Image 1 (tube, rainbow, N blue to C red):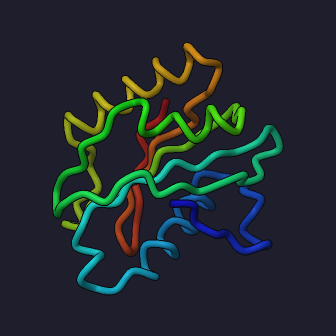
Image 2 (cartoon, one colour):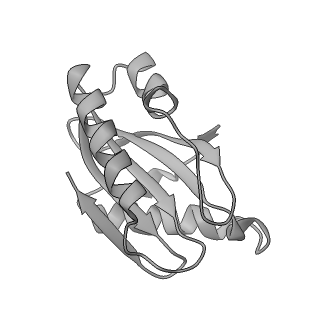
Image 3 (spheres, one colour):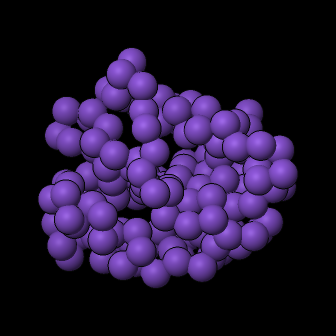
Length: 134
């Protein structure tokens, strides 16, 4: 599912800009749905303009089951050269789990093979964020 971005949010200068946009998107969900883990792929062009935000999956309270094809199929179809992964931790705990770290590395390798750069992986809560640098 593709998510809309306002015109003023199209260009990002930093990871903090992306985190702010994604927190805004997360807050659009009602309180009940915010208790689930969401995972998005954000596609950027070479000027750091957001080309798309795709909601890849909605999991349960502490887990998403994803494969690289789930994350990369849309960016590949649009010939995107740079992506950001983003997911929320409904618990509010922002430190990445071992699974988060392993999945980030897997996507980084898979994306690199097909010519896509994984810029970062952001974990968000309603009020803060943490980056897994790539």
